[in-house]
Length: 362
Image 1 (cartoon, rainbow, N blue to C red):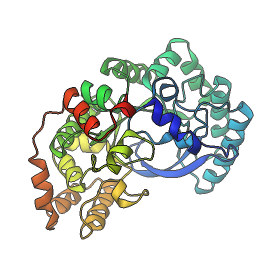
Image 2 (image 1 turned 45 degrees about the horizontal axis):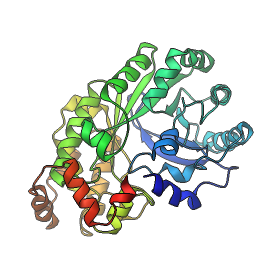
Image 3 (image 1 turned 90 degrees about the horizontal axis):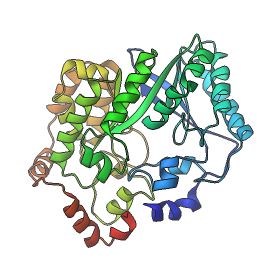
Image 4 (image 1 turned 60 degrees about the horizontal axis):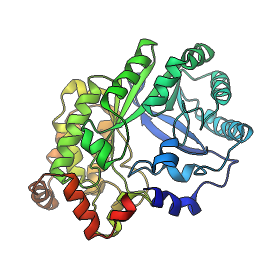
């Protein structure tokens, strides 16, 4: 993973004048709406810089990968991003660096305070959303920075997203290389909720090396685990980003993004209260279709449109409509579901060796 990080340095962020700005579906206040998402181009995720990062993460290109970024550069990006986002009069806005908001090595705490001051001036705003690894949330809670930030932010509310990815220890730490325990995630969520902070846990559909069946089962169990603890759950069908392990596997034919049918299967098997907490994101926008969840060329667009309507309305009839959609590729998907399970460390090492990627992944 460190080798991949080194190779990706030529694509690191160099334009430190402008932040990344896009819009993402969210539901932090009980309904789905478009949230302006401002990513400040920071030095990058400390976990990636020190340990190689997660195997699927594409945020590298929104950071300098360790090159210094000054406080004035971060605040200039903030000003540009807020100016553009304010045009849509959002009620919730995300402002976060490429890694963790609560990591003082990446985002100086004085900058975090100034972010709170700046967003308070947006008249339509009710909620500030940020993202962080759980260990930095706990650090912020223990040294009172979180409490100070909440005071500074009033009367706005804070929502914090944490990447759980998978509730399975082997999938989360051996395949995704996340480097966190379920216990630390639970502690971070509890610390936030005790302070009245809205919590969001991110889960993935189909990390590398899982069969389609394993991916479905892992996603269902992860969403259930997250929904029983967090206020909101985000399900992210995995996309392929350049210079990640998933990208290398995909280029060599060793990885296929999830079928949209698998996403429908996951949704169908969740309880109504779990679906109420769930938002699906990351499957309806670039990159190109073959780098994200897809079916065949005949039905991909139709299934996506149905699922987008479910995402916006929460009407379970759309899940049934997607499930009942007829297409010849359903049989191919069902055949893939029959593939033998049993993802183990030994099988992963064999697969990487056969693809010539074992040293890259270390």
